[in-house]
Length: 415
Image 1: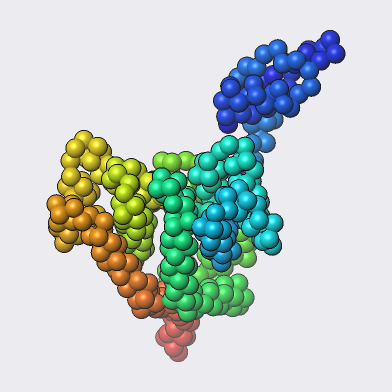
Image 2: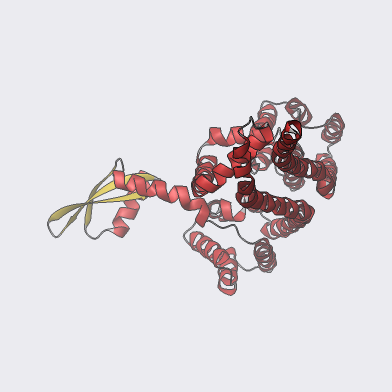
């Protein structure tokens, strides 16, 4: 959004009004609607300092106020829209009726605004892009598919099926993570209580030793001092770090790119991100190809919904290869993201004119791989969980008992 200043003549006096607009054309239109009198000129200008500070504050906390739509509510709304659209009801009337019927405030706002945008002449996909955070990239991609193919009802039905599949995977992921998460939370609470209340009881004893303390004891004493002396400051610093991190992640592309690169190097997380991305990419791409969308356009839409920037960057080279006249399988092979078996399958499908059917098989393969990772997630996390628990227990045991053993040995030596 750009900042404009409109000079308005009203009752013989010139007044200036600042406001935001997407372009100068829109600014002229808004100035005529918003301000009483004759608009003399509209010029782009730098926003006032206080306005810049206000917008910075709004951006900083925007992600806290934003809420994604509940999956159940979104799936139900998409199903209703698909049925109503298939019955011949207009998109505007469908959106308005669902918005009026729902009790979800976020969904009501999203659908109501989209209905107003359509009534003003905007397309459904352009209106939906305003709510990319709430709706998700998959919803935007399938709405665009419905507009390109002219069969919105079928695209919405397919979207609801995919959202339900994603929801099932999320539920499976949460169930797999429930046990290790609860164990780690319990251990963290126990460790904090021990550091805050038990270690101080031994601190006086350790100080009486007046001897060189072992490293585990020094670590425990440092943590005790940090928790009991600077606990509120540490908590405040963590909260500030969280907000700054979220702001940088959402407003700095370079920072987000490096964060995604780090995630793609972490044990287990890299496989979850990789196969979830490839599963979603092949799912949308196969649907677009099956609907008769040109490969270049299908790639553009499919890649646009990928949120992991390094993977998105690699897949963008595929579109460039295809636009230059190259084959799809050669472009995919250059990314190094797909196994040789997958490349051969796509090559066979492209040569035989059955690319849509072959991409469906590829999508099923990546779905199977992703499901296998989710199903085995709990077992894969157990070694890490046991290692962390063992490290905490060993630190506490050695930190407390080593100095006491040395004290006992010193007493026996004096005797």
